[in-house]
Image (cartoon, rainbow, N blue to C red; front, side, top):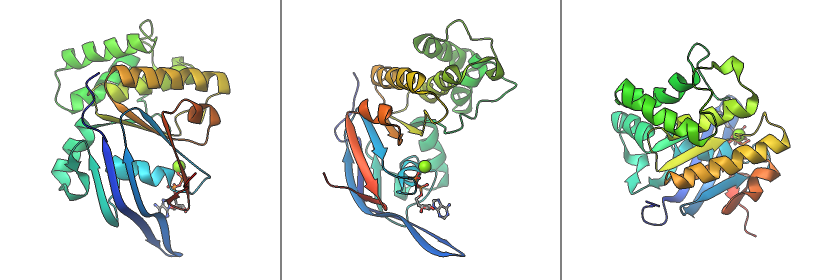
Length: 228
Ligand SMILES: Nc1ncnc2c1ncn2[C@@H]1O[C@H](COP(=O)(O)OP(=O)(O)O)[C@@H](O)[C@H]1O
Ligand SMILES: [Mg+2]
């Protein structure tokens, strides 16, 4: 496995405050955490800061304070064009609501992030087909999303997240729409394929089946880590 130096992610004194009409909300409260390669789960009740933390690691949001270092990159210091590059190449994301394009086939959907990152269509599709084979969808390449089951859609989203060989793959409530048996199958597959591809996985979830599958559990409460 081509894992880089440990830890893959370093968060230091990280803060995220949302300011709005109703006043300030401290979503992440001076959080310090090292994340090693493997599969890490952020868990805890609704509103504890799981999604905010995922968004800060993926640079979909800027911290209000503190530092985010991923794979040796100080993400909090990147300018906008470097952030685009970071999101496309270092990070893969399995979106909460999947975001598959209804008009595109499974193969085209999976190849899309590769093409957006500058791969030739032919190469992106070859890479997509290889990953779809790994997630058990080798016979569904020409299907469209509406022809798939929930579990198959989620497996497509997993393959797509790995197309660009990210160091870190993020998933926010990835099993939210699945029954318990499908959710367990999808997460086992996610953990195995991510490891095989050399990507560290970070999953925000309150699904106990997903938590069980983690190498490390980070429990949050009010934007802080609960010490066990
Ligand atoms: N865009 C936003 N604007 C204002 N408050 C937000 C925003 N996003 C999240 N919050 C607040 O930040 C806290 C953490 O939210 P979130 O990270 O979504 O929690 P979780 O994913 O654990 O349910 C909550 O109190 C939530 O209401
Ligand atoms: Mg959330």
